[in-house]
Length: 218
Image 1 (tube, rainbow, N blue to C red):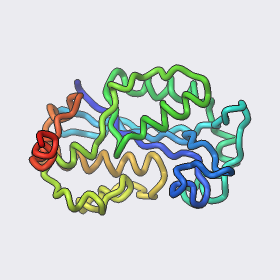
Image 2 (cartoon, rainbow, N blue to C red; image 1 turned 90 degrees about the horizontal axis):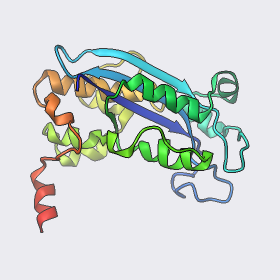
Image 3 (cartoon, rainbow, N blue to C red; image 1 turned 45 degrees about the vertical axis):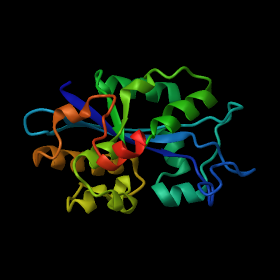
Image 4 (cartoon, helix red, strand yellow; image 1 turned 180 degrees about the vertical axis):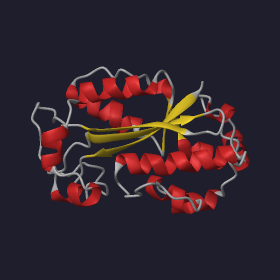
């Protein structure tokens, strides 16, 4: 394993949809509209090797292309015109994402693969091209690096680099590529400071946090 993919997704939303778990009568299904990813080397200086950024023109369960809510545009900076002009079909975007990985595993802040694959692919009637076993939760990596559990509530993907005193090229929160870069440079920092090693990125992830181990054995 020479590199890993650190990625993030932005998906359709509306005011209050998160608090309703996207179950309100007018809430859109949380289909993915943007994938951003960073290819991080696990050798040498742990360099950023490449980036990936794609917009998706999502379809609802009836095959229609819903317009993005103004709240989504305010949150992400992505307009309906952007999606109309640059958006790919979900299947094509996933194929390009899989090709970008070159066989590597994927890590996100949390479990974005559930929205990316389980929800969006189901709604589109697709068989996901990437199996779930290739996805890991970067929160476990941060814990393995010795980050206090009580600090986890202060973190989001977009603010992770800020937590470690690091800077990213753009740093706009809720842009999939910028959020992925925030996580990637944080993991790069932990690798370079020897708080993580390449072996920590093996799946399934073994979280070393003593409190979790004690809780699971209780």
